[in-house]
Image (cartoon, rainbow, N blue to C red; front, side):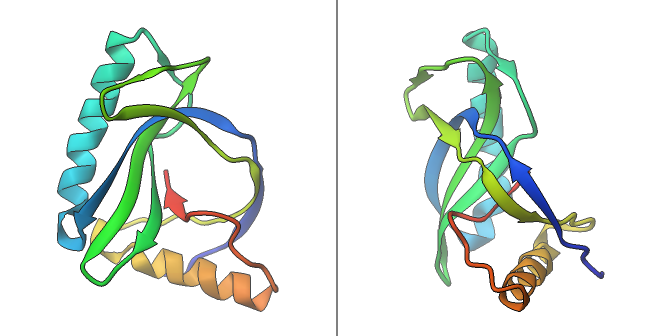
Length: 130
């Protein structure tokens, strides 16, 4: 699949999220479980989702990933238990669409990394997906 890279200016967003370290092969399962937990909290707290659910990857390991899974919400949020309130940073972002099985999404990350190198850009934060 050919990836078309687009530059967007993102606005900061209030989020509720869970940060976990998981084995690489468990990412899709854990992600689904955590999204369920986050959206159950959003409903209980009377919050309004304000964007696409997301995942950010704070560190990559050969066997384990430190990831954050959450949802943007409208207005302030407090969190509950392991669900914390935070903010997705705003700023310039290189983005693309990945269409296909989740286990092939690494190709999209590779395309963005190559584009950034070709255009003299450096990452300013954790990569992620929505």
